[in-house]
Image (cartoon, rainbow over all chains, first blue to last red; front, side, top):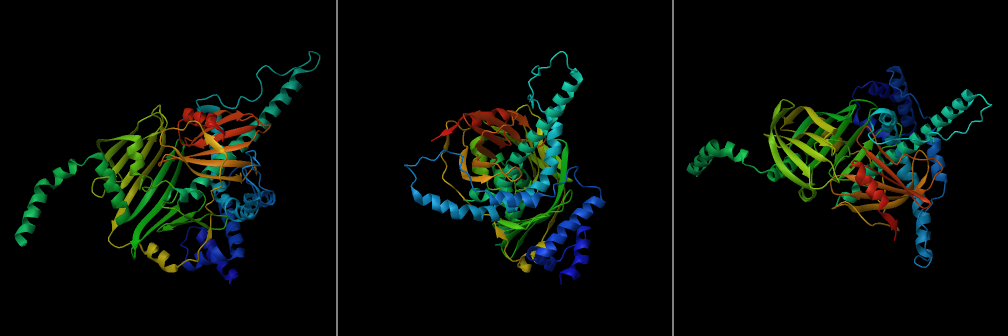
Length: 190
Length: 312
């Protein structure tokens, strides 16, 4: 059944209408979903719409995230909270991990590839506030006898690496914010 | 009986137009709210954020007394979302579709200000600001001027005939355009769009639900912009970096601000920056934790929020 539908699926990705049945199957069938994402990718590649950096290891990261135990940042005061709430947490959080946060977030990730590129421009030109002054201006110690050029190169490389890491982090937060806006909107519905 | 009717018609013919012009700004907003819930319409929408434009197809209809909305992206990755009453489903490439209980779809559209009248009245001075034209229709401009410097200002463009929101612009404190939603083509119909009818009839099996979790938080704010409240709290991991965070969402009823508390990392983080989408990101290190505030608010406000957090 899935094989028959691939033709249809391909057509859909080329912007032809999608039948309700297809929509239903898409939601249900794992294999079809996989095909869908592959076709989507192929389509994008053909139309030259692929982002400069394509994160294919995304699913793995998600899995890794789920595998990790939840961490509470706020220090726990023992007196206030005895055993009970802890137990609750242990059963609830893995569920969130699988269903909510990480399963969902991929959608936002796709949207935010744009976010990263946008941010780059903002960093260098538009942002009114001083942004990303990472390496101390005059802080690189270079012995006189060594070639200053080599040092400069090292410094530049370091700087670039740090910038990339910062962008990754900033983007992670923005991505999460957009995701939370979608999920937490249920809290607004009073 | 007929006589009374005639008097009514004549009265309307004479004064109907004047009555229109005399509507006060809050009545305009109330009518916008009402019109949105009642009519069947189809829109093409563009959403502009500084240098980035996206466009959407937007269908709205009442099918068997149920409000149905369908949004499809027309640029970038193909994604669909629809809402039947209070159940919103997002279908995006590469992931399993999921649903959320929510009153609106979180994508810029004429629904942005729906059911937010109370919040608007509390935080903004509302005034009329002349007429304009958008999507080939005459529009009444309504200005929302924030009462303090902790939120962005808006100009709303309402269709004179139907009161539907056809455009909104938001401006930062320096009066720079932050974002703009604009309908470029609008069509009203007596019957709801076929697609919407099919969507309801298809009875698509329910998707995975995003959980609504509220974990008790140990953090508190010593200062918040007026009318801002904590509306959700939890602990989770950021998706792409898997960094564990304590999370609080704040809202003034119109826009949301996310507050993250994470263990202080090695990488230095810019203290203040604004993204192309007008999103402010403020970071503050407090002891051994980093506090990050993200949202469409003035940068100074984000910074103040970041600095005002403490343990209970």
